[in-house]
Each structure stands twice: as C-alpha cells, then as structure tokens.
Image (tube, rainbow, N blue to C red):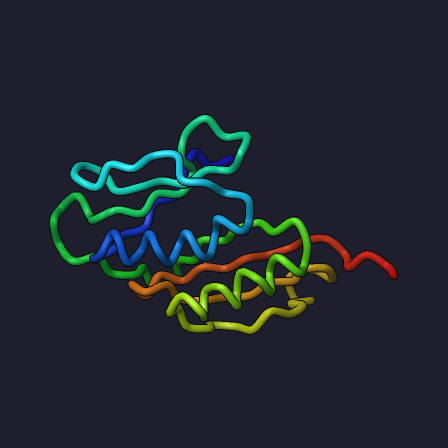
Length: 133
C-alpha cells in the first residue's frame, strides 16, 4: 500500500487546472493547498491526507518527468477511463495510449495513458469486466 505519490511541475496553477479537469471527475478532491511551501494535493473521499501531490521540486531545479515513471489512477468503470482520457486531452495533455483493453496485463485490464502539461506520464485503469447488457 502506498502513502502518496508526488510529481513535479514548473507551473502550479496550470497544473491545478489540468488536474482539476482530469482527476476530480474520478471522485478525488483537493485536500491541501499551500503553493508557497508545498503545492497542492488530492485525495479520495475516504483518505485523511492527500495521496497525490503536485509541487515544485524541493531542490528548486526545473521539474522533469521520470523515465519509466507512470502514476496510475483507478477507475470504477471503463466509462471513467474514457472520460479521464478525453478530459486530459481537452485540458492540454497528450495521448500516450487510447482507452482500450490491454489483455497482455490481464483479460479485463482496460486503460488509457496520457502525458500531463509537464510531461509526466499518467494512466487510468479499470480492472473489472464490462457489465453484461
């Protein structure tokens, strides 16, 4: 179990607009806002503290995406995966993989991949089978 994940940004307000559009629809909300010292953080409804932080790097150097780094958000259903991907593109992100099944992970792995405005790679994944109609 993870405590939290932190990614860097070079522009907090631009990043906030992006993440408000992308992860708030997944049911997350902003739980902390301290742009002078930390940045801002989001959490799921049941969390006491932020689980996903966006901030300027502590070393005051420019933020850079990690090679091989991917932050994955869990979706409740496949529609949320599609909404995440569409919202990210609308907010200025770029696609790294359209929504769809990735059966090489497991038969019900349905995901989408994007890059945020700072180049960080994110995914949104639903691990559930599509409900039958």
